[in-house]
Amino acid sequence: MTVKEFLKLDSEIRKKTSCAAPSCFISFSDDDKKCAAAMEAAKKALESDKEDCDALLLKGKLLASSGNFTEAEENFKEGLHSTKDKNLFLFCIADIQYNRGDIEEAKATIKTASADYPYISLMLGRLYFSSDKLEESEKEYKKAISGIKKCAEAHVGLGGVYVTLGNLKKAAAEHKAAILINPDYSDARSGKAWICYFMNDFKSAEKHFLKSAEISPNQPDNYIGLGWVYYKLGRYDDAKKEFLKAAEMNPKDPDAFIGLGWSDYQKRSVSRANLLDAEGYFRKAAELNPQYADTHIGLGWACSELDRLKDAEKSFLKALEIHPEYDDVYVGLGWVHYKNRKFTEAEKSFKKAAEFDSKDPDSYVGLAWTAFMQDKYKDAEKYFLTALKNKPGHKEASAGLAEVYLKTGNKAKAKKYLGKIKSPDTKIKYGKQI
Image (tube, rainbow, N blue to C red):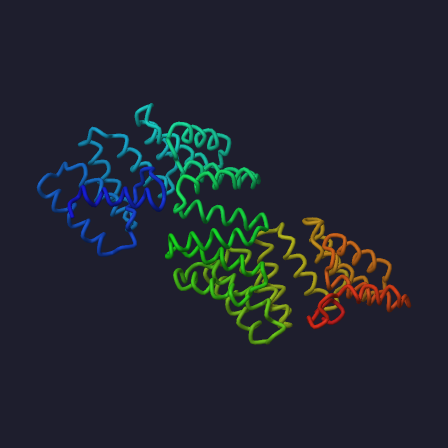
């Protein structure tokens, strides 16, 4: 194949599987043989003509895709001096700088392109988003949508702005628009999947993650997404399978191991071995990224369930050091103090959790059991009822209220709340049993 044929192939693949916007990367980067053949073609063409713009463009894309940004940028700059289509090379240079994290340099580069070049807005939308300038990013992406026919990438970018602003409905609409333009655009599919996930529409999330994985089978984020979908649906074995796929593809990603840890943690009542496996996965995640609060939270809960209370407390405190406003950490820390019969400290931790998230029933269940163990039955009743108000049908809160009413001699009410525990075969591990 010639240089022109490789560039044509690159363009065709992008149109089918992503979008038609320019890129500093080659679209067939996962095909080592094709990349090697393309590089050979580019080098051969440059031996004949050092200023062959197509060869410089192809070589630059191949170098960028292999992670060699410096040489790629040099190739694009050489092409810039030799071509009439300076805008394309300026976009590729800015794209390199953007992916390298040199945001201001990328802005300066793309602004030297022709004023009528529509892809300026697309690049600026990305760059402003990376600088947390969401209003400017929104404006540029909207310009790109109006200025570039069927620009799926601009819709996805605008969707990302709306996700950050917390407007999931608008974000979903933009990703839907991108999918309508190109049903095989994997970023649009995975983005829509995560939006559906956060809107608790797990069936739609599953559909889009599966489609994204079909389009981009080597992208581990698709399997992490599927793992969390199955986790939320209570399909912990299926979740573990997906997280394992992600871990095999990228063994340095702590998120895959966090997912594995929680999948096994949720099966702790089946076997202690599951809990030990969960601990191992959380430790692996913490090794990979010691500054990631979620790794220490998972490890704290696993150690707490294993009654390694000093280790649990250490992990929760480390998580708070990294992320001091994480309500789940205070819940975990509250149970550590509860198990150590430090009820004053337990109460402080559970109250702190409730301050950060007043709708979370677990902090009130903790407060209820802390009150119960100090014979404060009125307080215990109040907190259990708050937990049930926040989450109707909460089994631990229903079981706790039954205990309160049995303790205070109200057998009728105790029977009522015991009847609300719809799955009598499910092992309920609540405060008093710890």
